[in-house]
Amino acid sequence: MEKHAFFGNKLLPYLLLVPQLAITLVFFYWPASQAVRQSFLREDAFGLSSEFVGLENYQALFAQPEYYKTMATTVVFSSLVAALSLAIALLFATQADKNLKAAPVFKVMMIWPYAVAPAVAGVLWLFMFHPTLGTLARPMRLMGFNWNPLLSGSHAMALVVMAAVWKQIAYNFLFFLAGLQSIPRSVLEAGAIDGAGPLRRFWTITFPLLSPTTFFLLVVNVVYVFFDTFGIIDAVTSGGPAGSTTTMVYKVYADGRLGGDLGGSAAQSVVLMAIVIAMTAIQFRYVERKVQY
Amino acid sequence: MVEHRRWNDIVAYGILTLGVFLVVFPVYIAVIASTHDAATVVNGNMPMWPGGHALENYTRAIFVGGARASREPVGHMLVNSFISATGIALGKIFISILSAYAVVYFRFPLRQTAFWIIFITLMLPVEVRIYPTYKVIADLHMLDSYGGLILPLIASATGTLLFRQFFMTVPDELLEASRIDGAGPYRFFKDTLLPLSVTTMAALFVIQFIYGWNQYLWPLLITTQDSMQTIVTGIKKMLTTTDELAEWQLAMATAVLAMLPPVAVVILMQRLFVRGMIETEK
Image (cartoon, rainbow over all chains, first blue to last red; front, side, top):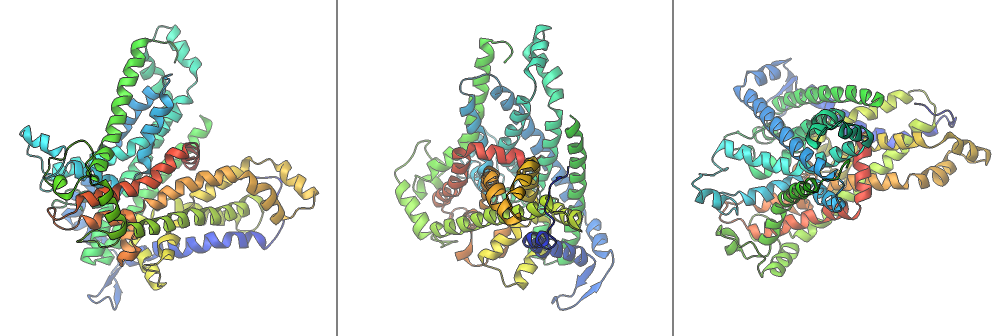
């Protein structure tokens, strides 16, 4: 897509680009290249000198059993959050897509949690499920369930998953609803005339036609779980207990800050960058296809 | 819907009401907790209806701050959040509308290169390059400053892509007409393009304001003084003491205050919000 009418100035376009390019170079390319450079260096204990160590930081990283545990945690966490928040949001979106009088009200009521900061969402859920003072932890204990997310890794994981899902439903709901509303009514009417009930119409017409939206959301959700949930994890569990909720991004943060292992932290950053670039590439291949659809 | 069945509507209302309940409940609990005194909240038997300490909790949170871990009044944190969120939103709009104008309305060597340099920033959120970016900010002496809170977060391509997409839909005839009227690039931008872009700018502002307000990891790293922290990072600090001592009623009042501005933006400017969401993701 190109404009056919344009200005011929020689200098002006560069001046217009200066602010964005300057900020991008200073705060994006420079740090990103530093991360790559640092991942090949080792600093001495005082940070005074550093030597080139080749792939040693990467070898050390992939020799750590903890790193695989972190990867597994990230995979479990992302799949649970993505699957649950997509399924729940799709259920609500299909209901809100029906011709209800109160549909606009329900729509607002469903989308506002998007605006709640992940860290705040984490604090809300921690408060509800806090082992000693949580409003919902008490009934759980009365029912004989020994709930304690501060001690049990799986309880902690359940808690951060719930908080992350709660916050993500809004986003998925919004896009599912937009996707549902773009499905032509005539197709559904044709299905109805052929005698298909609502459930059958959903699985044979709506769901397949919605697949571009679903796939787009899947990618966005995985990226969300990777990065935006940092606040939730830090507020609720700080990666604990015993590292059971430490995701890959949380480990980059924790290793660089507490351990001061900048080379190792940088190597982790580079691995993460590679993963994100791969996911974005997948997303763009899909966007290409959407244009034809 | 295609056919109208009564039970179908009833099911829909039932499911949606359940959904709204799930969505609202955690916030309801937080609001309730912010109206009780410390003892009621901590004993684990808090009632489900508001208590009588709302005024006391909110005034203490806003003007005095917590007694233990963080002594910074929340009022000040709110100001910091407002400044950085507004700065991030306006900064992004400013740099991206200019660069999109350059990329769409001019032909010059390295145009595609410039576009790709900007475009690639979409891929890497600040979370993956936190320590090197921290070091840049430290070297520039921008720790504990608004510049440090704002500038690294406006380096992203979302806005440029959004404006580029919008400019592409502006008919070429408008540019030809203003050229016939003798308008140069500045006049065309100011008198034609800018007025047409108002809605796009507003939608981008809404999205970016929420994004900026909700930042957590970045402010956490680069603010060392309590006086520079934003409200979202401040809540956690109220709870870092041992659990028995944490002032949950104040933390919950702070959480409510932290949610209020962005949630109000979504509800009051729902149209712009939805538009901004859908457009920036294209």
